[in-house]
Structures are given as structure tokens and as C-alpha cells.
Image 1 (cartoon, rainbow, N blue to C red):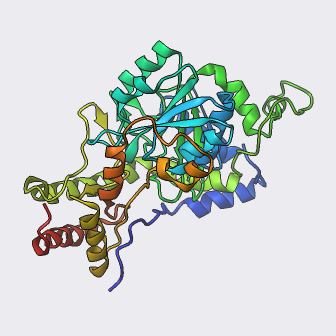
Image 2: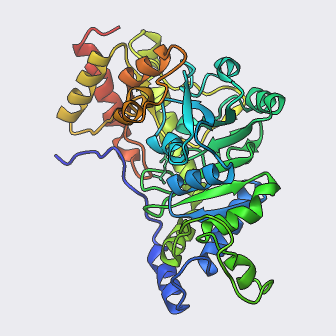
Length: 383
Ligand SMILES: *Cc1c(COP(=O)(O)O)cnc(C)c1O
């Protein structure tokens, strides 16, 4: 019996045509025809002033840390329940992540804990919209304004999701997207920096282009380009952008299809939540999500691990997710303040969360996944 994979990147069928197009244009380096199409699409569809394609979500976060001029000792408040790059990008510049616990309902940063973590060294708040579900941005933006802090949205999961009608990634000073193979819209490895605060635009172009003013040169504003600031090679080549463009023009279909599968899980597993066996994802009423992920919270780490093994025996691949950063080897090696607050929810969610297969085309398998989930709780008396 073939295994139902946890993730399967969707191919629209146009990717190779567009890659051939880039080849035909003899334009393989970055910032050509397809890069331009992709960044314009992001600007229009996410309502952001400027979108710059990057090699990865990680690269976008690293650009954000450079733009913020993070200096050794600067503190950045962020969740511990996130991907390593959220913290790594700042640690690379000497920044110190200050980890906040998450909300038990959405697994997003607990906004009510942030103010107690602010010190004179605090520079920024990085929020992660877990599973494409928005953080409480009203409260976080107000807090940031009050304390003169910069807000970065790690919107790696959240393309086209909304918070109160606004697209995620368009609310903070900067937003970071990922087009990694595991994300809704993909080119294998890729990302984008979304710039909402115009004061960052010019310098972002320089940093992305190896610290040169090549952008001004390409646009006929100067006669030659030179080294003007620090920077790196953060821009993707045209082949990746061509692939990504095929996905962008299908973005609505991709998300609609994922939402249908998400809803099928949600309806199918409702009875298990009602009987107290598990908890399903919670979507606050002011959020519209993009079905990036369907997860379940089981009663304990033991039941979660047994669930993954049981599903495996039914040829279904389910996976756990982030291990908290505050307890990571890197946090110990670099003596990051592990936490200044309790991390009970982070630790509990990390131990109890499991993700079900969700990808475009998973539809025919949903019934089996739901049935096997139910039979796990018939066999085991987990409450
Ligand atoms: C995927 C992801 C990233 C990193 O994106 P890459 O494109 O893989 O570098 C950063 N933050 C979060 C929350 C992610 O899920």
C-alpha cells in the first residue's frame, strides 16, 4: 500500500514553460522579467508598497535584521515555538532573542506577555503567524508604537491570509514570506521581503544586491555601480522566479483547494473534540487563514507519539512540529537567555501537536485519514 505523504508540492504544469521562457530570454541572473512579475504580483495581491524576492524566507529575515541595524546585545522579542530562522537571523548580527510564550488557542505569540519583556534594549517584536492564522496585530502594533519598537511579521506560513481584512505581512514594518517546498506557494527554496515602512526601501535594495547600488544603475539613475553598504547575495535567479510565477498565477486555486481539505478535516474530526479526545485548530473570528496546516492537539506527548506511529501503520505520514528554541543546543551554545518567563504553553503544544497530510490533491485520502484518526481513539482510551 502506498504511503499518504505528509506533504507533496503541487505543480501547476506551467513551471517548465516559464523556465523555458527565462532560458529563451537569455536572462538567468536575478531581477529579470519573471522576478519583476512575481514582485508586482506580491505588491498588488498583498497590498504592500514594495516586495523583493529573496533566496529564502531565511534570507528575508536576515535582510530584516540588517535593515534594523541590530547590534550586539539588542533584544528582539519573539516566540520560541517557531522555525530556527526567526531567531537565527538576529543572532547572526549579535541580537538576543527574548522568547515569549504562546497562546494556547492559536499557538501564536501571547500578546499579553510582550510588555513585561520590554527593556531599554528591546529593538523589535517578531511575530510568527502560525499555520497562517494571524497574531493579535492590533494589540502588538499599539504596543510597538507606544515603545518605539519595530514589528517584523514572519509570514512564512501566511501568504494571502488576513487579519481584519488586511493581508498578513502587510501590517508590520517588514514582512517575510517563504516559498520553500513545504509552503503553500513554492519554488523549492525562495522567499520575499515585504516592505511596508518606506524608510527601508532604498537600503533594502542595496543590501539585497551585495551592498551595491546596482538597482539605481540598472534603472539609469547612475553611470556605474559600486559598493555603498554591507549586504549579500539575497536575490534569486530567474529560473526560480519563473517557477514561482507559475505558482502565483494559480495561488487562488491552490488556497481554495487546501481550504476545502482543511474544512473536511475540521468537520470530520469535530466529534473527537466534542468527546474530549483532542483539540482542533482555533481560528479567531477576525482572522481568515490560508489552510497552510491542519494540526491536532492530543492529550499528551505519549499519545501524540503513539498516534504518529499508529497512523504510520495505516500508511499515513503525520509529523510533529517545532521543538522550542529556548531549549535548543544553539540557545545553550550561544548562552541566549533561555527565557525570562514561563514557557509552559510552548512546551506543552510542542509535545502534543501533530500535523495531518495537507496538500493540493490530498482530497481522495481525507476520508482514510479521518477514519484512522477515529479508530486510534477507539483503540486507545486517551482523554
Ligand atoms: C519556512 C519558515 C521559515 C524559513 O523559510 P525558508 O524559506 O525555508 O528559509 C521561517 N520562519 C517560519 C515560521 C517558517 O515556517
